[in-house]
Length: 169
Image (cartoon, rainbow, N blue to C red; front, side):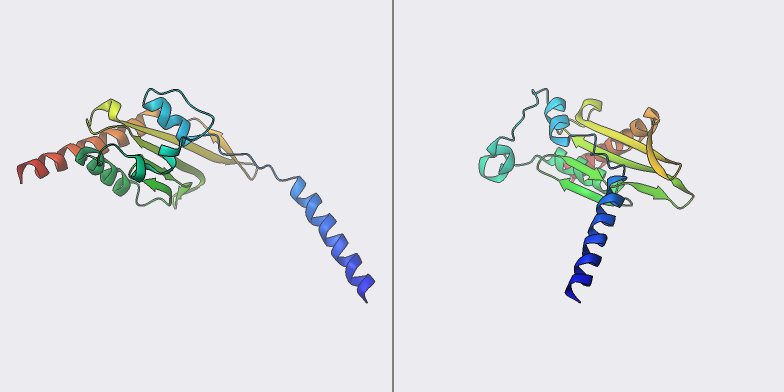
């Protein structure tokens, strides 16, 4: 009985390994840490500095109200999508892939980087990624740059309104 079970287990393992071998798995193409450094005008590094790992221990100042407002607005704008990461201290938001019920054959993903509290066009970066189903596999396709720009402008407009209201009260 044990030999029969061992043979079945061995066949199952071999089948599983050969089945997994044909999977077309691709690593994520973006590096948020590298993008954040480049957005801040810094050179990308191969290792993460300790102050980036423990920002509360090494921070030189408290988070300012502009970044807080812009971050909150961006987080609200993307709340309909599944959020993978949302880090207020670094100003980054990453969504997971999202498809609308109207078109299940295409999906979108966003990376948002809030660089500073100036609320200008240079203060925020919105990266948009799009994939479409092709022969049962998700394939990267080109995105409409205007869509990402409209989202960015929407975040900035709402942030400015909220900042003005906060300053008036």
